[in-house]
Amino acid sequence: MSFSKWIGAALGWSFGGPIGAILGLALGSVVDGMSGGNASTVYHGQQTRQRPQTKPGDFEVSLLILASIVIKADGKQDQRELDFVRQQFVGMYGKERANQAFRLFKEINKQQNISTRQVCLQIRQMMEHASRLQLLHFLFGIAKADGMVTEDEVAQIYTIAGYLGINHSDYESIKAMFYESTDNAYKILEVNKSATNDDIKKAYRTMAKKYHPDKVIHLGKEHQKGAEEKFRQVQAAYEQLQKERGF
Figure 1 (cartoon, rainbow, N blue to C red):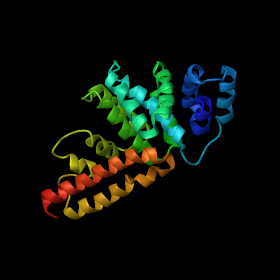
Figure 2: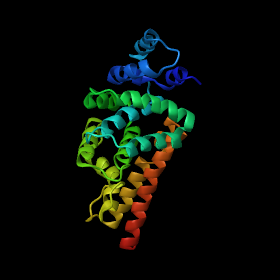
Figure 3: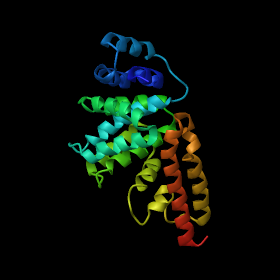
Figure 4: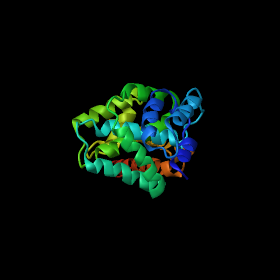
């Protein structure tokens, strides 16, 4: 499949708004066999079209733009972070599709004046909560790809989470999946250390439902893999507390 056909078939609401403007600039450099005028026609034809559910391409484009923002947060681009993005896409989509996505990512990454707030508000309006949580999980993975998460990267991801409408508890839960500390299991389950065993059991059921891979089934099997990782970490946190507390 040519890049132009792939991108045209994969995207829905992200062809409009501020994300569409970013995408339009990137497409001007990478779409094969498509003139600037044709690309503009596609964009304007899709701009007011709203879909009830996020398409895989909408998620991918949102992910690439936010990944670019996080990678630039500390004022430098580490090759390990770029390699992480490529490897994740290869793992999710296979080499051919990943190469197409990464071509787009490199063009997006060249843009200097991306408004984090405007991009995130569009995502918040159009993307369901479970998919936004999945975006956040991926962003922490990028930030940690070079072996450490800098304060600038944490601050940027925190800002993104706020704009995306992700509450503090959900943010801390996902963040705890990437940090080693004595209270990580509690944070992942969104309870404090004073919680009773019954509280923990209830929290586990709630979190297991929230992070269940079926929540993002509409994004395709490739994105369920990331959701499965979150789900496993919730299970591991619960099992750790079961062992520590003996219930």
